[in-house]
Length: 360
Image (cartoon, rainbow, N blue to C red):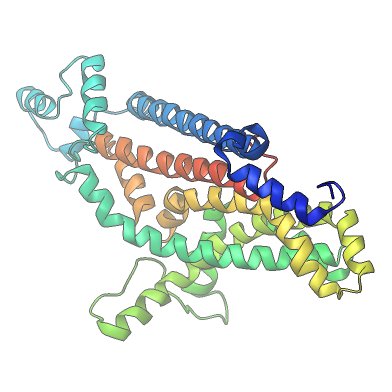
């Protein structure tokens, strides 16, 4: 009996041949090895691109903010009359008396170790100020990110599956409107309406800040949550609209696919066809958007934090720009940009695992 006429014998001989080192050639492991090498080269390329982008951000953050009008040393005096000798001494203390290129190389060397210098106005290391303000930003933008991602995916799925119906038209129109609304304008509108109060509507929420002060324990948690309501609503209103539109568009592209028709022909309920087949494939562009938005969790709330006087990185950046506090501005700009770049790179690295066609 030959192997061709007996599948079991064919499997046995094939397994034996594969176990033999002499047969461990291209037919056994070649395609997988080539796929692994291709993926590693793809990842290396993405990491190299991220490194170049970070260096470009480092260069940009140094030269860009030196175009801001005003003398930071004079701004630090607070308008007091200071002699020229004292101003020169302050410039020497902060290294501003050195040539620009000398300052640049010194800045790059220290930045590689995480040292962005000392803040002009706070007289503390820049990284200490960033570390102190980071938890407030992560609390606000992280909460908003989770909410608008879940709401956007859910509504995007439902509107696409009911394409053309009244609910689809209402949600899509609202999402397009909110997506085009500036976040600071929406925040101001919410403050006027629900903090200051308009007509019979009383002021229900604080106008800004993280806490009222003096609270501890559960009362403190409730107080912080009370202060978070309006800024979170502002971020969610703008963020969910983008997620909804991307999810809806992706799912509409999938709805005409043959595999969905086959799934329905097998007798699967419409709900199962949507959840088990259509949505997982439509999620790929949304996953990319999620990683991009995850990068902006650190960098994307500058205007909202400023409007609501939220003590996070956004408010700190605005305060640094008003001086200008060059070391603090440069450090914050680098952190914001690095967060976006790293999240985009992580999305690029993960995407081929979700869709094998990418990176091949």
